[in-house]
Image (cartoon, rainbow, N blue to C red; front, side):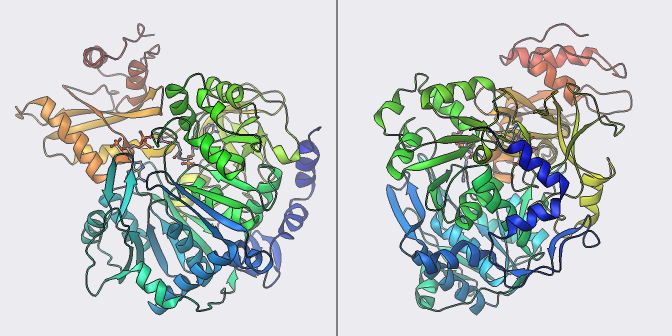
Length: 637
Ligand code: COA
Ligand code: AMP
């Protein structure tokens, strides 16, 4: 099939509003829009201004009305030994009941509800119940600890939190309640209610007067019909916090109307799946991939979505993904490259594939971090299906660049997520804001306005949104990714331009980790860098300088630092290495040379900035890392 991509992209460019009006026909609206795009609303304009709609109606009710017995969710949980199918009819019942519980507890339109949940169907039900009544959900990933949860509580000030008694990681139960209680104790804002799902694997005590038992509350509300609220297309559907350059996470805001239009369009055009087919995003509902492609897009499209509570390896083995694909007839899988690196490490020959019937499986999609060509080619070889790398961010909710399988695939260029999707006018800019020539590395930016689905602003932080994303290159959204475009328009996304690192597909701020290290009473100053890791892409690595007069055993302090980050940010930070050093390399103006330290750690050629204060410190860092088994870097430039 020849690709229609160029034709479709040209049609969007010729008339963006007509393009999105056509896509919007796939959505049920309660009231049509006054303007497709209103450039005078919000910070850079708003999509579908004046329209009224409801995301839950489009995800649940309209499918439940036509085909109530079709599967909406397949919950597959190797960690609890459960496989359960939830039909669209069942889902409507569960969502309505929970929506009734929320209303009974005083939650209404515009109120915030935090969801701190493991990968259980109730997490999806809670997202949809909020959407149904116009409450704004904010899901916090279960791998974050109390401090991170507290920051989010104080930023979005939820009236209610939905949580569970525990999460389950291979070989260990993660009790959520102490983390939840700890976060509420730390936060200045106190939610009025917590709705707690008791899991049989590990129960918890409920706090009288504040906590309600999820199952009991929902059982009492079962059978109650709660209509879908008529919301403005521009009303927020959710807030999703993501790492910024400081410890204060950024609340990415998503609207209702544009988000539905873009996600629905992507299911056919990019992922090439039909309603009724099974789509699986092996991620977590706490990340944007989970929001968009476990929950909203597949349900908007009337697909069956797989909710997988397990890992690519170890639950029970490196054949877990193939079992799920075969057992549930998955047509397309979306995951992060790190999952495939983990499988490749355990089963390099791909022998587990042979034990499963993958005949219904058509395409593998990868995103969340740079997909290394080795991993892509290995996946192609063992699976015998196209492997599509695509690039996007929490901020955008859907792909900025992809190989649009539904429009007909373009030839693959390894290392490139292919081309800009309709809606995105992508430019590569010099630091001075001028477009650079093909093949030249620069700042990847998107000309405003951003397409439907992308963030209109940050929660309660319009100025931070403008300053952080829109001010450096006027007229553009700064992606904070660096890369280049080749002569044919293929994009290559190489690295972040800020201090964000990507650990196993998870986005982390080195600044946030530094804040925790700096809070150790014996630490005078510190630096955290992301160093290359074969499995996780990057791993954080900390360097701390002790306050003078501190004669404690450095190894003990290193251990305490690691423990603090795990306790404060959470295990997902994956900080295992902290070095006590005498000094940190700096410029004469006192700026820590993190990039130079990373080059030393990764064994790259070290470019010593002319402004360095004392080059001898680089040798000290080299010596410290060498003692811990990092290869020596080549001589300095
Ligand atoms: N709740 C509590 N703890 C969690 C958690 C959760 N929801 N998710 C992860 N953790 C813990 C892990 O148990 C691990 O703890 P440990 O230090 O005690 O081993 C730690 O956080 C780091 O987790 P992770 O980086 O995910 O490493 P891992 O070794 O558990 O698994 C992979 C590695 C590659 C298998 C896993 O990261 C993976 O499947 N990633 C790809 C899919 C994905 O989630 N992508 C994200 C966006 S698309
Ligand atoms: P997140 O907001 O957590 O989805 O992380 C977004 C960041 O992950 C991007 O800004 C990129 O740095 C990185 N990223 C995501 N997908 C890709 C990809 N396909 N190729 C390269 N980098 C990617």
